[in-house]
Image (tube, rainbow, N blue to C red; front, top):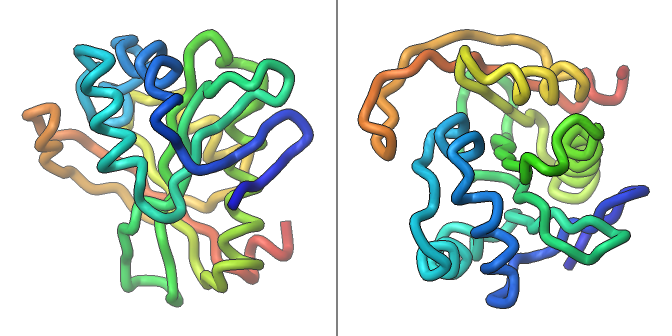
Length: 176
């Protein structure tokens, strides 16, 4: 199953995507901003595809023109009870070579459509750490509304961080 936008294909990850994943996941500008350390090897990227990225609702973000996997985006199976459910949270990462082109907002907007129209979600969440301005801009461009800020221990990074949380209900999304 896949999704499509003007410039992107969102599809499940496959074993053959490991080299493209490793290309951006080893970059120290990517993972730490999202709460995970840079990948140390191609084998680690293969393992992430087999475990984390094999989850339903997780997609490889593929550049249509080249067929290259340039990022990941999808639902992370994290739920909250403060807004109507069913709900889920979106997470994403993008190869820095593709930053500044509006590609991740394009992917996230398609995930919003998919989540509300096809999965029947009532609320979709998204968050970023207080220092992650690139992710903040994606959140803003997609119309998410700020809900709250909290400090959390980020196990993979071994530190406490401040995270801003945003959400859209189906009704808010329909009124965008």
